[in-house]
Length: 212
Image 1 (cartoon, rainbow, N blue to C red):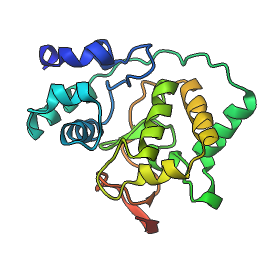
Image 2: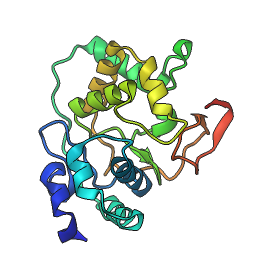
Image 3: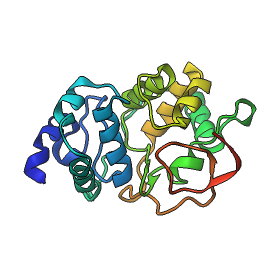
Image 4: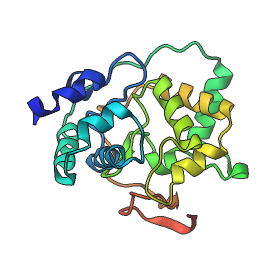
């Protein structure tokens, strides 16, 4: 598979470790189910990035899952976080939203879905640490405007639309400034059910009364 995915590394970096440009996420070590879902989303039009669609539009489900499994199996170290020119108050606001959310606006804490260490949960929930801040900002914006979609119910679109621009900036600043614990392996399970239903995550328990 390595020679077959050389086109992927042009943007995502050698072995899928990402690049310093800011807009291409790391894919090495991400949960296989998550990577497969995103490849299918690009191919089937739920995510829009012409370069990605061009590369995979004729590939089968099984081939895309094989590609996802290849990158998911790469166990590579993460670099130190980037130094950001942001205030301590902004970092603290981001930390609070990540760990506590904002119940008054029905904003769940990021850790409720992405895991206590924010490295994701196998097989389908991605980690958010180790991603460039520009990429995090752009993806939350894409969820909010409908440029990025997932299978219904599209929980991330709902969450992103409840976030203000200041929320997005603070959360992305905190996430991008944190070191990735260990080697960033995703957790095997969540300690509690998800607070809301999310399409494409059918193998995780939902809290009673969880929003759809």
